[in-house]
Image (tube, rainbow, N blue to C red; front, side, top):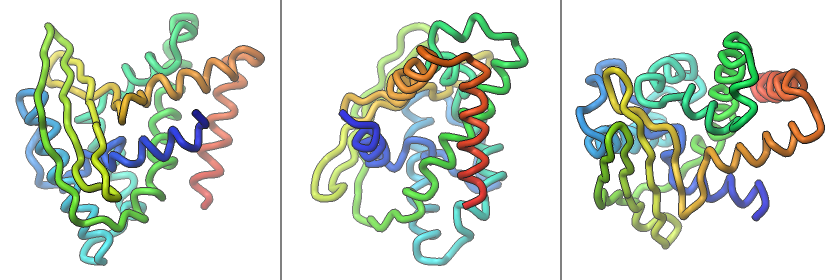
Length: 210
């Protein structure tokens, strides 16, 4: 499957990076995985619709605010570590930190344009179940009526010292983390980690000039 088709399927969820665009007054993350996903999703859909109708600021206008807030809901270090795979352990803490920061901005910039063109209004999200095994959990959901079809969206979460956080999103069997790992592995097969960092920097810089 091409990267473009994978990206399209990931966007179908509307929840990849943007499920948790809370307002400044929104409470802290809920206590269990399913509540976390449900509260974030409901708030996200309200904000997306308000933005689409011009009743609130655009997502780009709220960019820095959103990037700070989503840290409460997404474990970007875990996402970056899993997306990079085996090469992660070979990097210094400073380079790991730089990679995670670039990866987070890459995710945001990649999908913000697609989310801002969101025109739906009748989708319904069904929360099927949560499965908890120790410090890991999976929440299974479905989006009903997205472009006249249903979309399966599963969230993988890990419990840190305080709260549950999302570290992967699987849309119709396609994992965000695995998709990026394939891309990074392909680059690292021929280039150094420093080259990968430069590619990410250049990509993020180009995105943020648009």
